Amino acid sequence: MSFVESEERRDLRQVAAELGTKYGHDYALRKIRAGEPLDELWAEAAKLGFLGVNIPEEFGGGGAGIYELSLILEELSAAGSGLLMMVVTPAICASIISRYGTPDQQRRWLPGFSDGSSIMAFAITEPEAGSNSHKLTTTGRRDSDGGGWIVNGRKVFISGVDQAEAVMVVGRTEDAKTGKLKPALWIVPTDAPGFEFKPIEMDVLMPERQYMLYLDDVQLPADALVGSEDAALLQLFAGLNPERIMVAALAIGTARYALDKAVAYAKERTVWSGPIGSHQGIAHPLAQVKVELELAKLMMQKAATLYDAGDDMGAADAANMAKYAAAEVNVRAVDQAIQSHGGNGLASEYGLGTLLGVSRVSRIAPVSREMLLNYVAQNTLGLPKSY
Image (cartoon, rainbow, N blue to C red; front, side, top):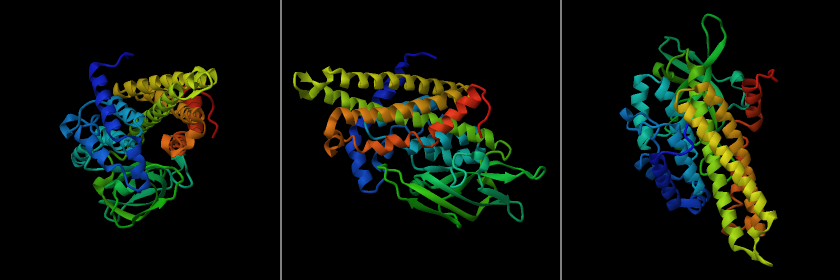
């Protein structure tokens, strides 16, 4: 792994940053307050090839990796206009389908993911199970003639279902030999009979709405099952590592946005003898954020490099650590940026108060900091399981 990005990656960063700056935080806020997704930004990102950069070239993608996808999201977020559905469709769903989907599934979905015309949501969290994927109650069984599936269950806090053509649902099937439930993934069209989704009212300013899903005897064809029935756990991990890397990119970009705003203000705002940035009470906390931000970014880049190299276990350790570190510095950066602005930090003119809720989300979703620490304790350090 090189600590110096290639010229191609630097060029990609520049173009992504230019796109993010073209739209910016003010655009995102206008859309959020109007209850609308960032359609114009999504469409232009697709036109530039950003949404499919990690998808194989044979399906219209760029043939690159999660590293490239994550740097695009980082730069868009650093401009104040991150796209959460980039975490879901091209990172999670496309990664799973590219690696484990059937040829028909790949031909059906990947071209649309590449050009932005198809959006797929991802549903794993349940009201009772929370982050515990071993306790999922969403189940699928073969229908009476064995040619399809009947899926039942509930899901909660599922992003962007209103924008999606389908949802990749994580559930469980019963092993015919052992009777035990094992993980499985199905692609469920959002207009399927028996599938219903209802918005969850949130006090967080985000363009993507959160939904509760109800699956009541949803009948699906045999090819709705993603890949192989016996490979579901591997398929799930193939999507969760990119998810953590991309959430880290979103958090790092948001932290960069907040830090840049704080530094610019600290240079310009003059009180008493000079700019407030000359006072260590302002300068040191911002410097600390910068240090932690660069450390989180290095871990994210390591995770993406390992994932793209096919080292799933190494990528899992790094991806969980990257997501943890990025979320922590995101919260710290936004808090310190507001503190550095004083009362102006909560004035609409400065665009920082709106980041309080969304920065806090990065500590909770898609997996909480506590579960990340559990992973590191048990899988990296080899400590006994606590639950």
